[in-house]
Image 1 (tube, one colour):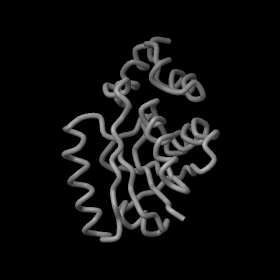
Image 2 (cartoon, helix red, strand yellow; image 1 turned 60 degrees about the vertical axis):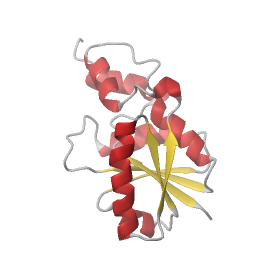
Image 3 (cartoon, one colour; image 1 turned 180 degrees about the horizontal axis):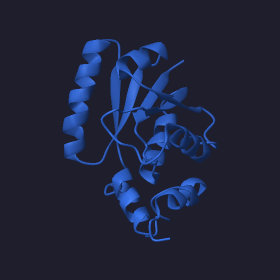
Image 4 (cartoon, one colour; image 1 turned 30 degrees about the vertical axis):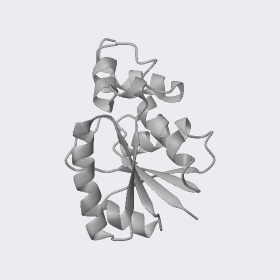
Amino acid sequence: MRIGVYPGSFDPATYGHLDIIRRASRLFDKLIVAAMINGEKKSAFTMEEKVDFLKRMTQDIPNVEVESFSGLLADYVREKKACAIVKGLRAVSDFEYEFQMALANKKLNPELDTVFLMTEQKYLFLSSTIVRDIARHGGDITELVPEEIREDIMNKLDQTN
């Protein structure tokens, strides 16, 4: 069984993330979407909220599992018996960072590959930071995040109420 792991902070997950999840799910027998606990970033959403959001927005994709993890990604992937890490790319700047991380993960786990998927053009501008900023100011995030999680994001972040 070919298992892929798509890690991220997903703070919150967006249509860009969902695009990568849908496409990656067709490449692997099982895709684990892994919300990472990153001590260097202050999250707007709790880990429980992130996992819940991801589960709701991927419920129609049968071979996707959602989990959370902390620690080294290379160790987590080995523990899950996955053959690849999936990373979404929007721009060259994303590639430079992700390429470094792919090399580091390969050093830690030589059997591990990283698969890079380019985001659909309509999501090139989209990031969790943009979603948070728009939501905090009461803006419309309809075209940025799935309907299943939109209201929860607005209820938590909208500071105009």
